[in-house]
Image (cartoon, rainbow, N blue to C red; front, side):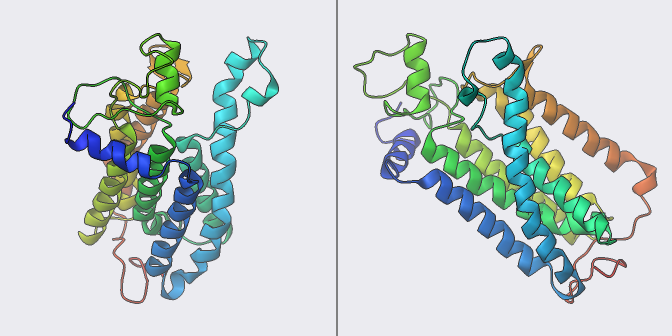
Length: 284
């Protein structure tokens, strides 16, 4: 790895945050950024959606923790590990799924149109992914596989990457840093930007209702399918030849493509956002 290349810059950035509670800070920033952007995107009659999104963040927290438990449960049942090892994790798909499902359920409960509401939320989900993965970068979790790329970085001794390499005999306890690994957290942060950009591009073309949301979902799923093989954290639950997250990504991508190809949605009215906050002809 080059002494003054991109990898060394990432290492310096990670070191600058060492000892600071940047993981929770980034998660809070993600919620604030997504909420603030949603406030801008929900004017006029769409203001009724604002409290629904606020409540839905509780669903995100529940989903993140619950999916983690469900994925760990089979292995935990086959082991003698304490209950504490089953609890405490969070899963990105659980957080995003919990947020979206809670929001959609609340919107439907209020008898408001669901697809235009999800379209308003779509780019905000990209902000959540961007800042959430920034927190993972500073925490060192969700690290990548060993790499010789110029932008690969080495994590310090307290980081999960170093502990993983130590357990596998790839480094010594006296070494100061891990082997160079892919900065998968950065890759997925960029994926969040692509999600938001794709949703906005589809929205500005006056696409049918639901297209911005399902576009963002497809971009995220495709990105995760491409990036997850570069993940080096081996704790992910495996279902057959793939990690659980890859199966979830494949299912989400398939659902998005099926929705986009369905003629039933082809005649839906546009989802463009007007100055008053109305989406298409749905008065939302």
